[in-house]
Length: 389
Image (cartoon, rainbow, N blue to C red; front, side, top):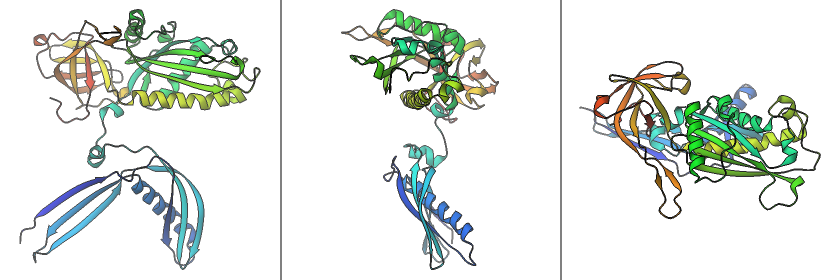
C-alpha cells in the first residue's frame, strides 16, 4: 500500500518567559558513575528550561501497509539557555537529580523563522553607526580627560562588540560638535545627514552629559542623554536618558583617560561601566527594529556597487529592495517637525560578489529606465535570499 504523509508544524511560544525559572533534571546512573550522571542531569534540566521558553513541535502521521495510522512527534526547543545556578543536587534510588535556577537568553518571537532555520537580514547584517562629540553640562565630569570624544568612542566600541553594528569612521564623526538639542531643527537634521554622508553611516549618535533636569544637588547625580539620528534623513528617531547617582563630590575619577583600562578599574569607573552597559543595551533595542541599509556607490550598466561587504555579513545571493531617494522633506502639519524624506522602491538587487568593504549585485531592471543614481540606497526590509519582488 502506498504511504501517505501528513505533516503538521506547531510553534508553541505561549510558555515563553524572559525571567529566571527553576527547573529539575535527572539521569539514571549505574556503577557509581555520579559525575557522568550529573552532567546528563544538568543537560536534561537545561533542555526543559529551553522548552519552557518556547517549543517547536513537528507531528508526522503515516498510514502503514495495514492501513493503521501511526504518529511520530518531534519536540525541539526554540529557546536558548546558557546562564544557570545549581540550587540543589541529590542521588536517590539510582537516579541523580539536579535543580537549577536558569536565566534564559532572549528568544525570537518569530516562530516561522525559527522553524525554518532562517534569520532576518535586519539582525544578521551589521549596520554602520557613528557619533559626534557629546555636550558636557556637568563640570566635574568635564574634568575627566577626553570624555567629550572618549565617551562616544567607548559607546561605539561597545555597540560594535555586540556584532550588530560597525563603528564607522569614528575619528571623522567625533570631529563634529554635538548636534543641536532641538530635534526638529533643520540645521540639526542637515548636520546629522552631513556626518552620516562623510562617515558612510546609517545612524548617528549624539547627546548630552549633565546633572539632570531640575536637580539642585549636582554633586549627587549625573544623567546621560543619547540621541539617535537617521543618517539618510537626519531626523531624530530615538532618544534615551539614563541617570546614575554619585556617592560624593570626590568620587569622580579625573586623573585617568576616559575609556582606558585604568579609568574602568577605579570605583567610579566600575560603576560607570555598569551604567554604560544599560545605555548600550537600550540603544540596541531602539535600533533593533530598523532594517539594514547600504548606499549605492557606483553603477556600471546593470552592475550596482554598494558600500557593504563581508565585514557587514553580506553574502552572495542576498536580495535587497532598491530605493530612489526623494529630495522634498515631509513634515507634521501643525508643528512642522521634519519627518523625513520619501523614497520610492524601483527595483531589486541580487548580490553576486562580496568583498571586505563592498559588494556588487545585478539589478533587476535597466538603471537608465528608473533614473537610479549614486547615493540611492538598498534596504533589507525583509530578509531572505528568497525572491524580493
